[in-house]
Length: 393
Image (cartoon, rainbow, N blue to C red; front, side, top):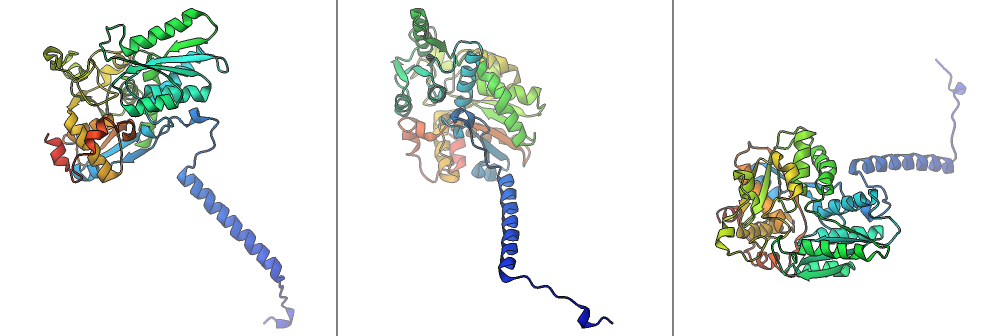
């Protein structure tokens, strides 16, 4: 048995004990913070606003998921810095122009576009970030919010009467003419026409970014993808990626507003709508309160992805207005008209899917851009509007 006299006991001074404890606590705290950062994937600093474009969140729409027994997710393109999916398009169009030498960073340059939706705002923001100027031609009945945003961003705005694409004064044609006129002046200022409807930089950026993001965020487990179609870039690029590269066996649906010809084009092969015959449209382009989607002509961007679109579902204005109110009240999602149309289409598609299936829709932009038109009507809808009431209209 060892004698107690052979034992040696060491005592550290109290201040040294405190120092060691502080080091241990600090190390543990740093470790926990490091794990928290990795878990939350906190973004690293960016070199400019343009670097914030893309990698948008995917969020479950809880009210629809609970009501229909199918998971409905919204790809929040409204979280891009200029507030819509068009940020991706604007950036890629400008980058493509730079690669071709049509624009040179640091030298005077203008980007011209004709748009009735959010593309002009995205171009204005990206141009401001990269040092260019913006000239936007648009219908004079475009929502006041979008006009105010464009003017606040410093864009030159040219308002024209709504007209058919065959009219030389139609907003797209007006934008191209203005661009051509500046280039003819030969004053050393470069000018490019964005041409979002026909420019393949549109669908390609969704093929390269939006599609892969959705496939990654769903782990490839996506049963249906739903988007509207204006230029055709988003639905073509995403659908093409999902079916070519990701090889995801999902059902691709084009959600179409009333008066648009895509519904008949996808389902019956004919780009025609009955209102063409009746001539009762409120507008020359598409007879709907919805902005940003719907068309009565085939664009190059739509053509590039048409074979990958399985069907189109038509949604009327009354359904879209009520769905927007429903999502705002039940999910805190304050969305624009095209997103509401996608949500209505999701409910219709869900009836054919197995319980627990996954649907992804594009949440294009915020309702804040539609206050004076679409939301002027949507805000009057009863707070307690039910999903059944929306779908039975």
